[in-house]
Image (cartoon, rainbow, N blue to C red; front, top):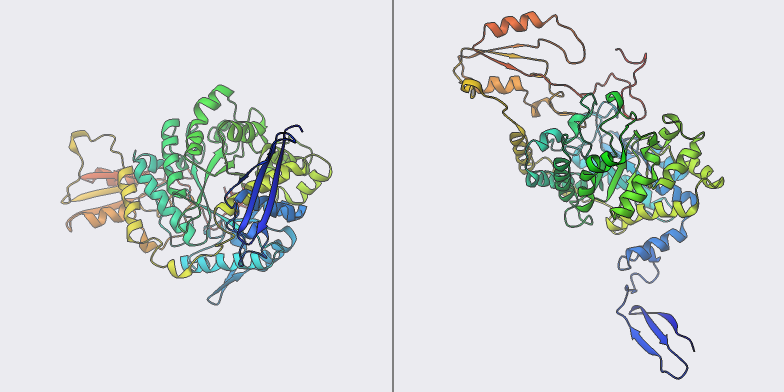
Length: 566
């Protein structure tokens, strides 16, 4: 007999075993090798589907679940809807919204984003938003409804914005990335990342969107503050620190989250500084300058990457197979999942015009290796159409679903989908976390020049003039991606100076100018105040603060039209 290999499986009360038979010829005796149990089947798991057996290998659980799923359920697992629309708060209670119930029934929703986000875009305020304890109640309620009202009971994966703190009410606010990198202290930034992860996971979040690893080499771009600066090495070092802080030793933990690297790739250098504009660089510059930071973070274990709105040399990043399949997975060995930036899948059609249909855009993204549709309007019925017309296939669909499910299993969500509401109070924005935030802020301050030892200022100066639009503005000094804050929590530069000087010191404040217009009517008063002062403190800079009166489009950007005054 020719060489044959046989595997015989046996399921018994002790577990599943297999024996390997090597039959060399009819005259030789068969050699049998028994392995240890692959996973346990006992009274508590005997009647459970394999995917619900916690002792089974994750790869086996994924394949078992995949075989049970319909096409619509698979497509649904790739959707990530706007989470803040999925709960209602009224009369002291928090419950799932009718919109979520409908979405779960019709779209088989797999993931939510920014459930706990509060800002002018979401219209969530200190009054109608959620406290940390209410947030835990809300995510538990949403999760419970999803599990109990879906055929297979697949838990949701909840992603949250975590660029410089969890963007939710009552959490710890840290300096923005540009300030974090100014500390030159990766160990401190890793501690910060651990705080952000803990505060997010305790409230029910599983994925933290951050760090941003775009290079700040186009200063007209409006998101420079979100970056770690212009240097690839600095970005990579700080990115590694955040990833380690977020993910810790295991994401199957009540205090760690998956880190999502943003935005892949070369997002920070659009033409003219226009957000999401085309990027014209060659392959050498792309790989040498803009990829090292992402590569370092992937080597540190990052398990999620977000696409970017821009195109590179005319190819939309969200539909660029070279980025996600050839480079990220095949060359770098990335093991996580890729999520589109908000509405960037449909942006392949609407903004880049490289395909004549929405189905073509969905297929282009899926074929490129984009696993999750942020916003939930890029895949869905358009992916159904793409499958029906052979623009893509079930092989690509199953691959994406596996990547999403793997994260849910590794997070432990099938066993522990809920958070302990009783552990939230006292763990969010506590004294320890505030001290770490203060330390990051202190270390981020850089003194560029101190001519004639002007600093430190004497507390006994008679007159100090404080000038500039950012000297007394709470939200200008907090940065974007910051939830509403009680005024009592914030000390502006002007208030800080007044608190430090002696009783005999007169502090005069003149705004002087504005940030978003060219008004100069206050300049003369500022000059006069400066001439009359013993010391002058000028506080300038930009602002990414959002206004509740602003009308926003579906990506969260201000809608520049007749809807908004310019």
